[in-house]
Amino acid sequence: METKEKLSEVKNFIDGKFERNGQKPMNVESPIDGSIISTIPLSTYADVDKAVKAASEAYKTWSATTMKERAQIFFKYRFLLEKNIQELTELIVLENGKSYGESKAEVEKSMELCEFAVSLPQIVSNEVQEVSLGVECRTERRPIGVVASIAPFNFPNMVPHWTMPNALMLGNTMIMKPSELVPLSVVRMSELLKEAGLPDGVFNVVNGGKEVVESICDHPGIEAVSFVGSTRVAKIVYKRATSNLKRCVALGGAKNHLIVLPDAHLDMTASNVVASMSGCAGQRCMAASVMVGVDKVQHIIDKMVEDAKKIVPGDNLGSVISAAAKERIEGYITAAERAGATILLDGRGATVAGKEGGYYVGPTIIDYVTPEMSVASEEIFGPVISIIRAKDLDEAMDIENSSNYGNAAAVFTQSGGLAKQVMERASAGMIGVNIGVPVPREPFSFGGWNESKFGVCDITGRSSIEFWTQNKKTTIKWNPEAKTNWMS
Ligand code: NAD
Image 1 (cartoon, rainbow, N blue to C red):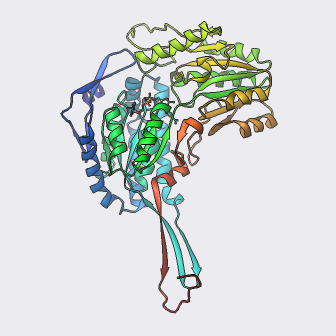
Image 2 (image 1 turned 45 degrees about the horizontal axis):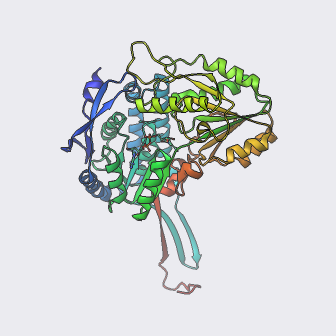
Image 3 (image 1 turned 90 degrees about the vertical axis):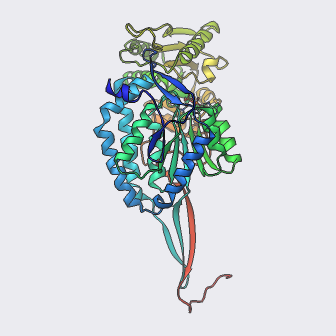
């Protein structure tokens, strides 16, 4: 495969050029079959510093362009994503292991994120008001400078597009740190941005792991840090970046509860719950992880098992990211079994013919889970759903509310009144009513509550405008005769 050869060595992208950094590279593996597909440099503070210098220099001219000029580049870029969608999709399949359809949907979502970004000149309006006779106050949204974006492995193409288009459209320059497990998509993203006409230094990529993240948090030339990943690392990044006086939004892990009521529509509910828990092999921060079955829902559970049996690893179910992930997920299933839960469908030990070196876990449904079991409270991040039985909605809400996380929650019912109760009482940032993956679409913003997000703003949509800008307030008087009527 041509792409495979071209991307056999990932380099950093600094000031519009790909470059080696002299450090010993790390292998990148494809989870589909365990083969080595590339290498990446494990960068250091010196690489981040070099990227910050390039981004600071580029900021001087980029921040002085108009939003409408920047939008022209992002129009072109959005169409380049579309033109190259097949190659970009294949890259996601190769490095992340998700199915072709899921990978293509990821690129399509990136295109939609660019569409929102090019609409920013219509949305970001400044304010002006005559506050005293002959005196006006105005507020303008200005960029903040060099910003950073740190990404996880589960959406190699989409998550970088949560931050990059809006941050750049608003006049900032950026250092991107992709996950070391999936660095290939961002290589093509860098090339396509350049092809679209983005000036050198506006977008830079520094590859690696922990050391790069720590350098980003510490570097005095970086004004803001956005992070998406696990809660454990989100806490580290949020504390370190803010203690260095940067603004930070850090999105963490999830344990999403779907509350299923007995009146829920049978087919729609079963297919939605199964799609939510197994899509992208359960490696979505919006995936269903706990189903709280209220009262008599056995018929829905039976249908879920029937539907889930049609989900086959290597066919319509991709791999999980690594050997360690497979081991962790299977360990959770075994722990639940030992603790007395009932495994209705068991995905352990899945293999795919011809891809024996790949990391596959089949869809898994665990019933009669109790709140103290690890599968009830910890993020599994695999195609596994734990069913907890509740006698009524109050008990279901107590279970949902007791989670440390709060990314998403959903209710399945045909009763508007009961749905409204869940909308009001769920302790989560994104709520679904008869929707298993309630991702808000732009201009609505994406972000959870509790330990699923640290920081004030959301990461996409309108809320991100606040994060990527600072307000400049100007008070103006041109008329020497004007008698101001306030203290000055
Ligand atoms: P991760 O936290 O392991 O890694 C995320 C980033 O942090 C990577 O770029 C990695 O290199 C870096 N990193 C890892 N360990 C570090 C350390 N000790 N110090 C500093 N940096 C470190 O997450 P992951 O496994 O790549 O992604 C899966 C996680 O991301 C899941 O928990 C999932 O729920 C979460 N996620 C959340 C959202 C959301 O919107 N809330 C979206 C996608 C993924």
